[in-house]
Image 1 (tube, rainbow, N blue to C red):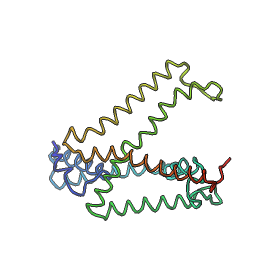
Image 2: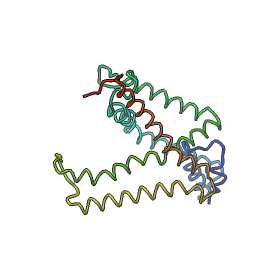
Image 3: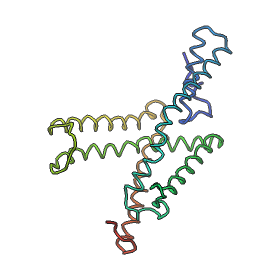
Length: 236
């Protein structure tokens, strides 16, 4: 059996590379169980990590092109242009927000460099950002789930296809998704406290949605005030 305290206790282990750490441990432990030499067992662990990295690279390559643009399309092009600096919403000859995409690339590159070469402080910072995003990323799904029955109640909308034919099935699906996501969030938040008394991780996960909500409200409030003062022209 693996000594998880030893495997995961290294200061270089973070939420970005934990998959490779676990797969290396799996390969090494498997080699030991098969009575391989220590060198062969260690090599098995290395190859487990390499195969995992290759498979994840191939799986993520296809998604990369969509994920690199979809968030910008939703955030930048799905909101009023006046909400953002003009350079962020400017489209190039191919209809792409090139400046916003380069800014996103720069930020991602900086995070990769910091986590890879920034030492323990950078890894701790990355872990905190990951904790803040854990619950925050699921909140939009909760809002969409709550809004779904009200959307279904609007009978005048054109719907190419309908899966839930009646109100009972709509409410049942809504209730199941709402309960699953809500309880998943609750247990995700309290698990560090239950397992190891880690209040720090719990507070970061609670603080994430609060921080991002306040940031969004601040951006919107700035936009609303500029609209009210006549500094901006409402888009049609």
